[in-house]
Length: 89
Image (cartoon, rainbow, N blue to C red; front, side, top):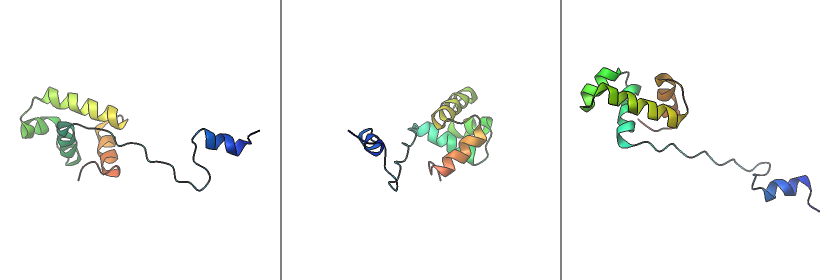
């Protein structure tokens, strides 16, 4: 009969003192990464659109996807998360 400790091992849970695996990094497209870099630089959507040569509505679509992938609610949280995850410089 297995004890509680064995059950955790059987379920693939790390034991005490075993480091937890890092969650996978979000997979952002190159354009999403560029939009995120611009957001971290403090640019507005209109400025990002001009700089990247895309429509402002497209920037908004990319930002919505970035925020969903990073599991954040706004662009400030996205910028902070990107820095913490070292997604952009």
